[in-house]
Image (cartoon, rainbow, N blue to C red):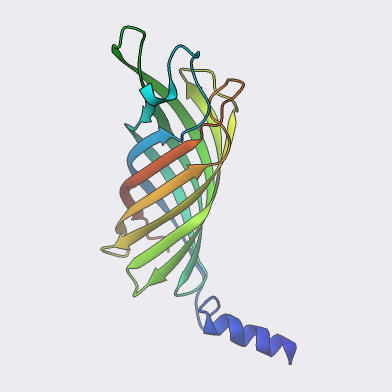
Length: 198
C-alpha cells in the first residue's frame, strides 16, 4: 500500500512515467561567458578606497560536452564537463586619479550535474551544482577548486538544436589575500546540440 502511494505521488509530479522509455544522448554546448567577481574585501593595498574600485564584467567563452539521460517526459538528468574561461576586469583609480584596468583571467574545468525540467516539449529549466577545477590563471587564486550552482533556461527549436542561458554563482573565494571573499559570478548564453544515438 505504501509503495503504491509513493509511485502515485511521483507520477503526479511527472517524475516517473510507467510507460516512458529511458534514453541517453550525448551533446555539445558552447557560448559566451559574461563573468565578474562579487564584491568583497580589498584586493590591493589601502592606498585606494573601496569607492574607487570595482569588478567589471569580462567576456570570454565556454565549451563542453553533456550526456542527456532522459528519465521521463519532463525530467532529464544531465552530467556535464565544460571548459569555462572566467574572471573579471578590475578597475581602480591610482593616487594620481588615473583610471587603471587590470584583466583577471581564470579558467576552469567544470564538472556539473544538471537537473533539466522540460515543458511543452521545447522550453526547459536547468538547476544543479558544479565542481570547478582551476586549469589556468594570471593571478594568485585563493583556491584551486570552486563549488558553484547553476540556474537557467533553454529552448529547443528541434530535438537536436537549442539555445540556453544560465547564471552560475560560485561560493568559494577566488582571490588570494587575507580579507578576500570575492566569488565567481557568471552569466552564460549559448547553443546546444544533441546527437541522435540509436
